[in-house]
Image 1 (cartoon, rainbow, N blue to C red):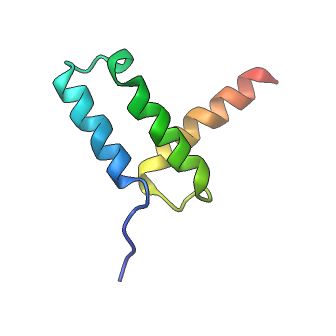
Image 2: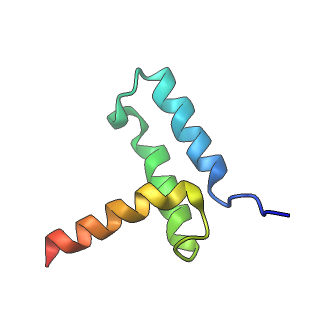
Image 3: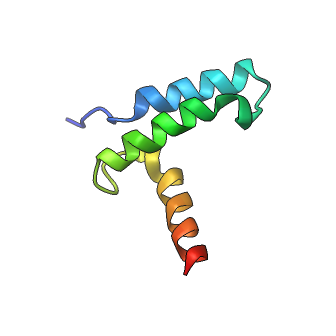
Length: 65
């Protein structure tokens, strides 16, 4: 039996926020921050919902080098 994704709630909140705000990410920054915090709490690969955020983090780290 698969376990529930630990960051699914935050991912759903982002989707709701984006829909309500005509997909303007700037209006959903608080939800995006909550998602980043959730993803940081779990090991990589634990949350499918975090895969895009993990990629974003890797790209940010590579650009700073």
